[in-house]
Image (cartoon, rainbow, N blue to C red; front, side):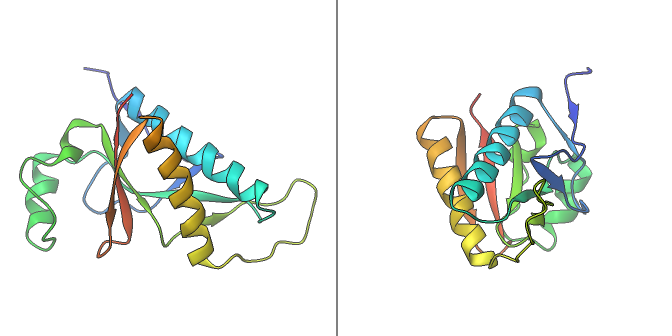
Length: 148
């Protein structure tokens, strides 16, 4: 019905190759994703780290996507929250380095450090009632549902 937003990479987040979903969310979910990306990047800067973007690893799932995923993912359920365009996954393992506008030398930041920064950003947004967050240990991502 034209109520979905296409997820095109921007300055706050990137999109991984999506195997079992398509890159669409409802507008309020995309807004929450932007909030996470902005908060994460601001936290990186505040801590004196080089700036990174978060990476979306899953978004809207069709019925066929869910059927295929359920065959090899024990966390997948038939009534997936991903089916409504309100839920997406953000990796806690993959991040994309952003070039420094002041041409500061780019130093790689340990992925565990970036994971902690992302955790802080998600915790703050959860407390502000922007998102629900579930830690997915086996899939290497945070399962996020917009509350906007």
